[in-house]
Image: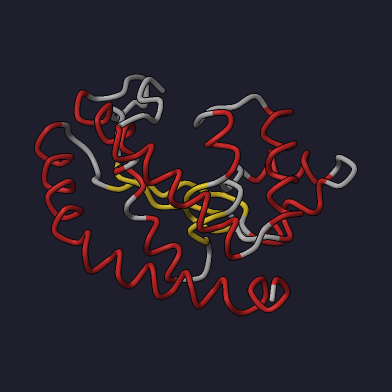
Length: 184
């Protein structure tokens, strides 16, 4: 079951959930986009270069939550980050197969290369990066690199349907409570 889930089931689960999520959150996303545009000058979306599964590069989408020089989080951005609503556009990354709902958060390319150099670090890139991950539940949105690698490798070893479901429900609970760290 676990091998089937990792090879086929996870992608089917992601597609079904992303299609439902996109349909349900489209009005919210549209409203957030209008608010981002109305409250600060600049683009509505950010496209950040990241390393995906097997370190394939892709652009991760987010609603912009900082001012244009990127020095300060906007007032709206604080709320978006606290609820993780700034990450709603990543449903498109999931639909395109670049991300999964659950997995290690996508790393910048230079960070991914340094993780690969660590013993067992290659396990991390063997699973698709995720919208929610075990690391965020244990260490918040900005854990130290050693803790991140440890929990990312734990996820890569233990990933499966029930484990993914547990992580997803825990992450949704944090989002609904507005408990993600909004300061950065």
